Image (cartoon, one colour):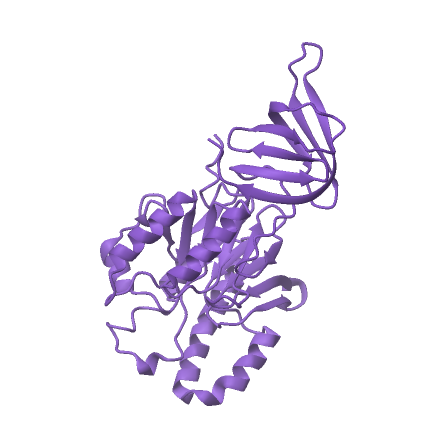
Length: 363
């Protein structure tokens, strides 16, 4: 049975977000950009921030859920260090599948959660981090449970994963280390030590699973480094990507291809689409100089709409069979089912593709 492309395990591309801090305007702006890029699954790397006492969190979740539903999206999120764990744990039990659903399309990923992705590659979760501003907060009110525990590490296990997602960062990431040294004098020494102990705990879990790709948040800056860990024959390399926090100018969102593990980051309102692969749904327009090719990936149909300069005038909806190449700057190449008894399918060649955009469903 084919996995639902709106599930974390069924999506071929996942929209990834850094800390959102309960900023609905930011989340909805990124959601819209992700929708235009054909992404129904979003993943927030901690500090989700919508579940917080002192605000109308139940209403906030309802509003966010409705807006996500209007775009056919599901949002997953993991522990940060600014979450209200009292509300989370007290109101939303873990389901049999290991997930905690705040709403049908807003889902919490507990620490240690693992899943196989659509490509067969594996993903694990290790959220949580120690707060540098703990001394400014009151425990039980604005300082909920935040630290990674031994129980979290046991739940994570020691089986290798391809992708680890979390909130903190492993040790020995040069650009991050340099940044933390520069800012250490701004904070009390005991808080610097507290944060370092939390990072050490995360690093322990990181070494347990030896991921090829790590994605996290927490530090409110963008970092992307290929880092070697371990010694000798035990050495492994991981691409460590830290996303910035919420904001219109920050580099805090991107798209993960679960087949290649390529992660491409972009500005919040950059809805540029450069390729259509078929691993999406919805209605798309592919513009060439002479024509517009409409793809309804939900219905698996396509139609060519000739422009004034087109030589071939044939049009009409056909059943889409496969997409070979549909990339800006290249000629398009896909197959459609034949209505001729002598042929199973036809190849379709377009002229050079100039633009690809998602449009509202035509039904």
